[in-house]
Image (cartoon, rainbow, N blue to C red; front, side):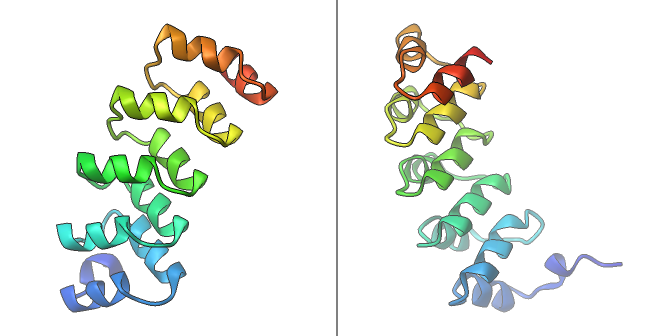
Length: 139
């Protein structure tokens, strides 16, 4: 059976990228087999829906360093968590910012991740006020 995502025309894909329904855009962003242009990826990176942004990150698509930086500092903790758990490179300055994230879930996921942390960052997470962050670091 053919894969529907590879049968879509460029016009259909563009219509989905700009569709008013965020669920349709999120499904599109999650599908790594749908061919997206750099411009369409940029639109999805800037999408107001955290589901669209986090699905895009999890899809494994190639993102520019600027796009990864943008998503790593997104207002939604779901997007920041998706970036932490992705294969995308995070420069040390972004890791440092995530160590100090206001959401304990973000800090917990970072503590459990394979992301390299400095000794000072590990100490900061070990002394975190939230028990789950401390427990995650010990795991």
